Image (cartoon, rainbow, N blue to C red; front, side, top):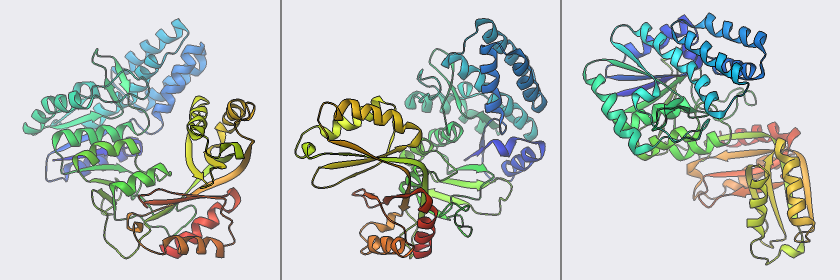
Length: 436
């Protein structure tokens, strides 16, 4: 059997749903379809929930009308009752927000099932067996319970020749409360279903032809990659490659089930296949990425040399300030540690580090480089291949780009380096020209 997940653009219009339904019908094996909310509807629901809680009836009515214009069915009346309740309470909790957001997929699935015909049956995540913890907004499935429930509830439908149409993105707690799985939740649902039912492949269908070797807005000729490994895909999506969320790959990695990223509207294009083993080929580098809106903080001072626990103190402080560390670089002398964080977190992180480290005299200063970006080069075949770094930094140097900091893990799966924001795209093009 196969799991086909359809993103928001693949179910947003009658024409898109027909293309998606046709892709399901042409499969020669049993299929479970997983569907997202219609494109833009989750955002509409979020705005509606906020408007209700704020008592802004005019804005609430406008958002509800937009949702009604794109859907039909009795669930719309239930949605209005929920929003009226939020307006009466005048507050929006994480749990009630999850309930409102769940309507996107719950409205989408029955419409897609109707397009497929009488053999299809729509199931919300809870009815299908997705059981989660109570971390509202970013719930984690209880894997063993979910695996058992999916087999008990979805597998019999396949045996009867039915087509289960499962809502992505949502599940239920063990007490029956609706939850959402957060960003990439529909992809996560698809791979959970595939792993539980022993699918041959999971297809993630959207309007993209696959994962590309570089952002086509920077390198126009960058083509979709036909095949990459799970390890490469995890690196690529962490650095911003479009098409899949890192969490969604976990069930596929554990079960060894290949994942294919496919264009719903161009099914003749093979897309990108993600599997346990890297594709063979002459090139060691698979892709190059640019992470924008990054700031670099360097914690420096002779007092750091040989002092145990300094790095731990730095990272604990960054975490307490709500910052997420994107990259780390440290000299062997231990006199400086550089960390890259999102620019929006810069001021909070800087203030926290100054308070925890500079003022007590544990470090001498915090140096800031605000206008920088991270260039990440990914390829499993780089491991053990001599000369990659020399070619990489030679190409960047010939392009006249200065490298500020460098980081590479012992796995040699990726090399990351910091450059000025204004030269980030030049660095990407230089690497692409050299290797790809």
